[in-house]
Length: 154
Length: 331
Image (tube, rainbow over all chains, first blue to last red; front, side, top):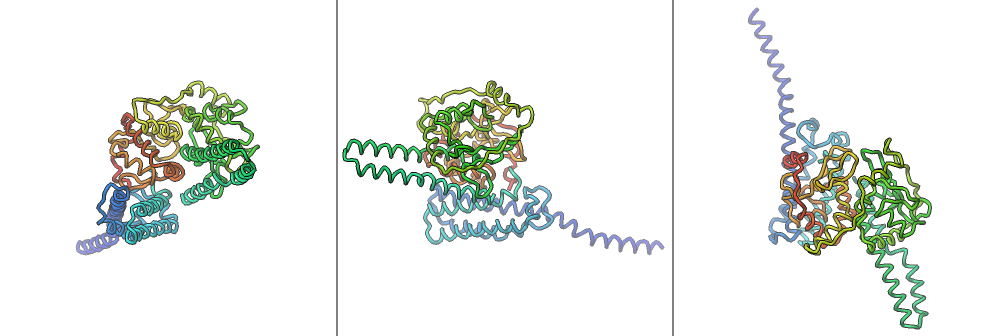
């Protein structure tokens, strides 16, 4: 009898463990995903800053322009994947409108990706500081268009 | 924001077109006059008149952008007429709808004289002697130079007229009483001309004029008292947004709650592009202002704004500090 009880409780515990495991994992993952995407966004901000320093004429070194622009393109290419279901709560400024209006969110993201690719193109093709500034400005506007409806006001 | 972006762009284009287009017929008439004029003296006078008028309109267009007339006096809806009014402005005291300021004689300001316009702009008085609510920033415009208000007037007259009918404000009681704005003005509004500060550079003085008068930056960036009057002591130190969850940044050079860590170049760059020093981008009303106003200014004027802002007394605003500290987490 004792043995049977032990067996049942072991099975029960195992079942609970198996059911419970993904839930625990998911909770951890959401927190980590949020942190991850925040770092990604900060990284994009840093790339933008470095390009801006050149566009403003503060820095004459142009050796990093391509890799910075490439970094923005790459970052934006995965941004959409970093807002999975279940990551709308917690310590995040992402608004629930992302998940309610997924198509709109993806669309504004795509626009930003296009602008980032255009910036990369300008850097590779002309390298003219003025043109880079204009392309960077256009990218910035597209960032704002996504932040406006999908990020908490700060 | 898509809508706003598109609207602003198309209106800026319209505005540029409107600035010059209506004057072609006039120029042609003058051209005919000129060609029939045999006297050199008369020709000079006419030529100067043309130059004065068209330059005045161009300057007025610049003042309209600097003063950001377009943002408030144009409804956010796509395709709504430039300066036709109707944009809702939500305040603690109710919702105001900006009026039509095109030259339409019935809905707009087509029947106003320059004097009427100046009274409205600098005294908050309508041609009928009614007092305007301070949602219209005559509190800042009161020190606008006579030359600038005349240029602005000529520019407004040159913009295509629209018949858009003005919407009635939805003001809460007791502020809805016509006595309310009158009392408010008695308590909080005084006309004071701007004084040139000879101890400071020309650039600083220009910056002060743009920030304090034309750009009316205080109207958002300074805290207000319970009656909605601006606090002079804590000017430019930011505030919680009165009607939504956001906050209005402290633009004094305080290192922790303000923009002390920005240099003048950062400010100019922000005004030109909307980029913050950390690579983030502004949004909301300020994004609109960057698009329709500050990005349209001359580089010199943006630098002047930066010089003036950096010269302000740093004010710590504890209510904003927490959010600034967390700014790095705020992406």
